[in-house]
Image 1: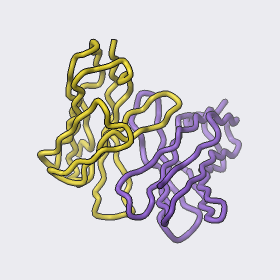
Image 2 (image 1 turned 30 degrees about the vertical axis):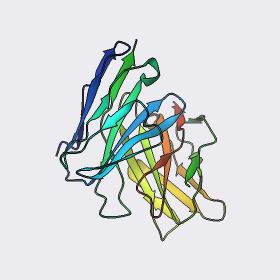
Image 3 (image 1 turned 90 degrees about the vertical axis):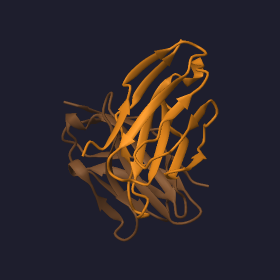
Image 4 (image 1 turned 180 degrees about the vertical axis):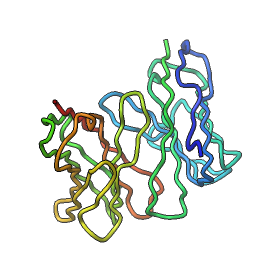
Length: 114
Length: 113
C-alpha cells in the first residue's frame, strides 16, 4: 500500500499560469480532501469529495477546481495562479464508511507563485 | 458549526519532563476529536482519536489525550518527553453528521535535551 501519493513535490509557477496537483490513493477510500497549509494558519479545507462524481466546496475554494472521475484520483486545478496561492497543499482520504475513521494524508506539494 | 482552538503557538519542555498541548473545541452535536503530528517537510500523521467511551485515549508513540466534556477540551499529554517528539501538533474536530474536519492552527512542541 502506497497510501496517499501527491505529485509534484515542489513547483514554481508564474502569475497567471495554470497547473494540476495530482492526488492518488490506493486504499479504496470514498472520501478525499484537499487542504492548504499556511504558516500559523493551520489547515484550511479547499474542496472535498464523498465519492466518484461528487465534489463540494470547503472553506477556501476560490481560485481552485476539482474533479473526481475515479475512486482513486482527486486532482486539484489552479486556473490562474496568484501569489496568494503560494502554500503547501495536502491531499487526504478516509474510508467514509465509519464515522470514527481518521484521515490519511499525503506528503504534500509545495507551490510558489511568483 | 464546528471549531477548535489551540491557545499556545509553542510549548517548550525539557526532555524527560511531562508535556501537555492544549486544545478546546466547539460543536453543536457529539464531537469526534483527533490529534495529528507533522514533522518538518512531511504530511500529517494520525496520533489518536476520541469517539466515545473512556475519557482517556491512548495513541501512538506514548501519547495520550484526555477528553473533558464539561470544559470542552481534549488536551494531548505524554508522561516523559523525548527530543524526537519535537514537531507541529494539530488538534481537529468533526461534529456528528459532518463529513469534514476542522483543524486548529497548530502548536509547535520543542523538547530540549
